[in-house]
Image (cartoon, rainbow, N blue to C red; front, side, top):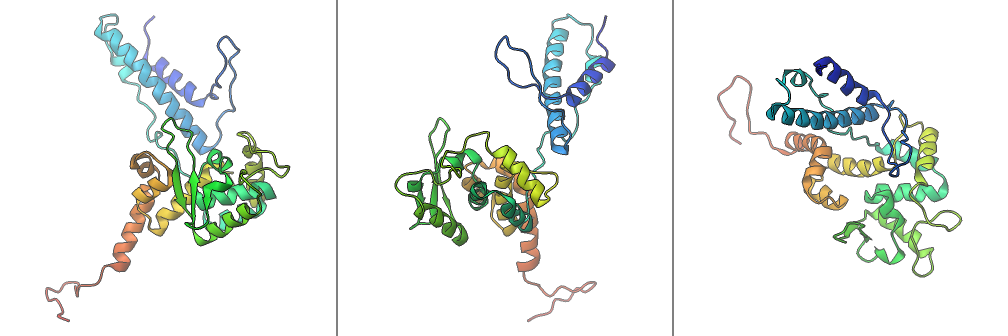
Length: 278
């Protein structure tokens, strides 16, 4: 039986609408995550379906080149989902950020505040030691888990510096700056439930994940006039391509506002070829 474009199309759509597979051990039973219901979740599944469709088409094209199938018209009729490759960057405004902070449990609140002051990832924040905070320069050293081992220094605002100073002076000796209320370290799976509860309390709907605090930091900087290279360095991106993909549209608005607000008038009048000499 020949493979038809309708069959491929249905297969492509089924992947997009099905729950994502979880990583399982070799030989173990395959498990699945929850079916996507949010806009971002549906976009992500469609993007995954497109990547799988690309692999299938490559295999079928090879079969066609080798003369194993008579023509390639059936799978060429199946088009990928459009405009699903770029993630939707969600970020909070200042008022929403304040509501979120006030809705967090005390120990978790400190992590949320630190994320908004630094743009750091959850894992990066949980690794900050007291000697990583330089109160004289107003910088925080962020260690890296990458193979290169290259960390970065993040400058703090006046408010951010006061916040970190308060955390550091309450510690004795070399300690993690952020720990749970019982003194135990923050682990990878600790933040999801607390973040969801805080969003519900703050009436942030749909709720955001911890990583969106990083997007909030970068987006607010972009809206305030920071250029992409600066934002890229602060976030620790290897180059500006990732930064540009997420935040360029916000910088474009800032550039447009700068031209409108800062460029002087040159005496032009509508329907007049005379320029006023000042």
